[in-house]
Length: 380
Image (cartoon, rainbow, N blue to C red; front, side):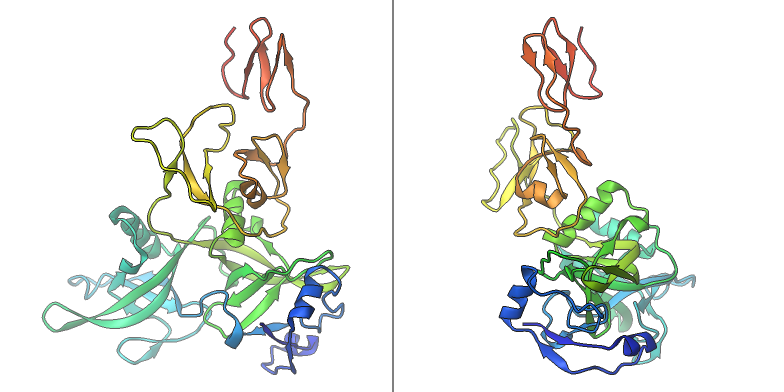
C-alpha cells in the first residue's frame, strides 16, 4: 500500500519542504482508479497530481541506496592504485562522506569492485572503461580497503551498475529512477510511472517519459521501454515538464540520457539446427529470433522473459505474423518474432503465378512462383 503526500501547487513551485496531510490509498481506491472510474485531481492537488509524492518509507520500487558517477580522472603520477584512479560524486548531491571521514564534493577512488555483478572478464573490463568515461552510474558504497602492506585504498564496492544508452547526456538535469506504477487509466495524464530521485527521499508520480529527446535510435528507445515495462526499470537524466490533458495536469520526464541496468552473463540459446541441440526455453520465456528474419526457417535465437504486463505507450512495431503491435512489449507477450520497428504496411499478399506470397515479401519470378523478402536478390 502506498502512502501519498499531497502538495499544493504553491508549495511545489516555491520548493518548500512542507508536506500536506498524508492520504492512505485503500485497495478499493486503487482498483477504481485503475479502471478509470476515478481520475487524478484536475487542479493538480490530489494524490495523483503532478506534485504528489509517495512516502519512501513504504515504497518498494526502485532500490534506495547511494549512486555515484565519475567527475574526473586522477592525473597524479604515482603507483596505482594509490594514484591514477578516479574521483566520484554522489549524483543529485553537493557533498559526500569519503572513506577517511571527511565531507567533500568528490572523493578519490583507487579501486572499483564490480565482482558482485557476476560479469565475465571482458564485460568487467568494458564496464571499467565506460565508468571512467562517465557513461556508467554505480550503486554501492565507499570503503577503505587494505592493499599491500598496511596501505589503505579508497574502494567503491558496486552493488549494481547502469550504463548510458546514447552518450549524449546534457549538463542540466537530475537523475531519476523510473519504474511502472501498475496504474492503468482511460484518460490522461495518467500516473503510469513512479519516479525516484536518486539519493533523495521522495518518490513522485510520473505521467509520461520522453526517451526520444535523448537522441536515441528507435531500437534504443524500444530497448529502454522494454527494460521499463518488463525489466528492472531505468534511470533517466533530465527534467520534469508539465503536461495537460482531460484529467488535469501531470509531469513528464524529458531525458537527455537514460541508463539501463548492466546484467551479467549472456542469454541462453534456443531453437535452430545445432549440435548439440539448443535447450527449450522456460514456460515464462519465448525464443526471440533476430529481427527482420521472418522468412528464414530454423534460425537459433535467445530465451527472453515474457512480461507479466506492458506499459501502454504507443511505439508500434511490426511482427512476423503481419500484425502491428502498439509496442515491443505486446509483441513479445504474443511471442511473435520482430519484423521491423514501426507499423506493418498492411498491403494485401501478392499473387506470384500460382503462389501467394507471404506477408512482407514480394513476387520476383511469377513463372516459378518465387517470392523474396525486401532487399534480397531475386532469382530469375
